Image (cartoon, rainbow, N blue to C red):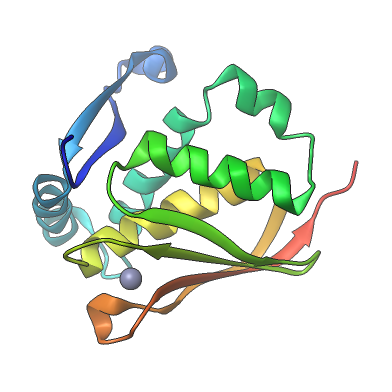
Length: 167
Ligand SMILES: [Zn+2]
């Protein structure tokens, strides 16, 4: 099995039909990070919005599954945990994503088992987490990568604060 590959949606902008032009491919993580680093230097404004945008695009590609669309209406934490783990599998074949805690005001998400953590990849994941969390019905007030192995921490943890929409 390939290690460290992930699948992201590459969008080719062709006027109004941009959304239909998403091709999904597996990319080695290091290759993607090198690309993101370059894009950030060239187009970024220092806030890693390019990396997060790429992560969000990857999440939108993952969210295309029919089963998931049905799942979005179910908000049982144990069920969400299974869904997030499954979506991670679609996005990355290394490590795992776990929903550590979920209340109506906050969610704690951890990614573990990545052999070589890179800050760039974590910025991509921040975008991915934000997009998936919103799709699962949350209104986000803040999203922070609170602990990071690439910054010397022992874990990679994201904290999402906001509200779960009930409608
Ligand atoms: Zn990290």
